[in-house]
Image (spheres, rainbow, N blue to C red):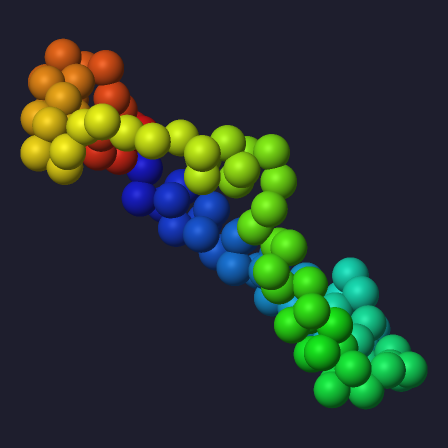
Amino acid sequence: MNTARILSIAAVAAFASIGAQAGELNGNLYGTDFEAHVQSTRSSTDVRAEGQKALPNFAKGPVADYAARTTSNLDRAAVRSDALVAIRAHQIATGERS
């Protein structure tokens, strides 16, 4: 059992090192150096300004609008107690299985 385990670990390590060497020799492992060949046509200040302009509209949408309009009539303690009851009744997944 131990021999098979050691051999399987050695095989995985060998395949990983061969893959790493192939990437280094080729200089382009699955397009990882794509950014090195791209020349931007816009300045960073233009991009930041566009991002700042779009930021207020980022969180708006049907889900966000619905959540903003929803009001709750429960306080924090009531929500926590309901959550404890649901956890004890196994209605909420907890731990590593969730």
